[in-house]
Each structure stands twice: as structure tokens, then as C-alpha cells.
Length: 180
Image 1 (cartoon, helix red, strand yellow):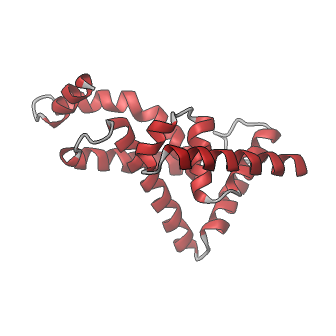
Image 2 (cartoon, rainbow, N blue to C red):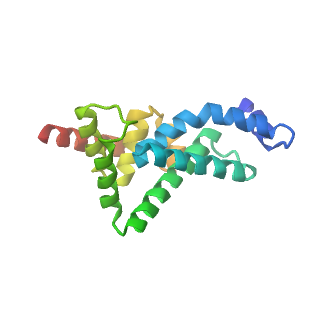
């Protein structure tokens, strides 16, 4: 944790800020991209949301209090940016969030950046059918292998509630995949 405090100090120091931010990008660009991509499903959209995430991180670094890990704080920003993006996209299209999600799933098959097989597509559909909170928890645990403690910081939810959400999500997904 002391190393993180030193790193944050370099991010806030105008003399070292640019180099430190480049390092921050190198460390978190891929994991944040995958987190965002799992939510918005489209490569180009994920790139846009990732860019917005890093802009927000950069603009708000001075507000980071250190109550959580920098990683958790950035994931929270990425999560919120992804949710906002999906809501705005649905609103622009004049449809509900569920319909927008279904459209994104339909486009996933033709997405050149999606290299999954039929089973992975079925899994994506099953995950997309979950309530939003269960989706987030499932994706963060299953795809990103985040610890419940980290997820708790990111989502501001107790570890027990996260474990229950994950368990319910797994059961629903198993049921949906078996019935397919």
C-alpha cells in the first residue's frame, strides 16, 4: 500500500505526472478494456468508454482519497462510464436498456474482434439475461477473476452480498445453458 501512495504522489506531482500517467495506462489499459468490453460488448464502444474512463481518472486524480485501492477506484469509474454509455445509447435509439443489450448481442456474432465459438455466444446471451448487478458480479468474478474484496470496493457492496449474487448468477446461467 505504501508503494501505491508513492505512485499516487507521482501522479499528482506536475513534474512526474505525465510519466506516471503513462505507467498507469500501461498497467490498467488491458484489464479495464476487458472489463468495459464485457459490459458494452462492442470493441469500438469499449475503446470509446475506455478513453472516457482515463479522461475522468486524469481529471479527478486530485479527488482520489485513498480510501480504496487505485485499481478499485478506476474500475468503479469504468463501471459507471459503461453503465452510463449503455443507458445513453438506449435513450438515443429510443429503446429500453434490455432492447439495446439484445441489439449489442446480435452484433456480437459479426464483430471481427469477437473470436468466440457458439458456446461462448450462448454464455454471453445467458449472462446478458441476468439482472444488471448479477451480470457485473458474474463477469468480474468469472472473466476477470477479481477477488470479492476488490469487487466489494468497486461496487460498494458487502462480500456476502457479492457471493450470493455470484451464486445466483451461476445457477441461472447453468439453467439457461441446460435448457438451450
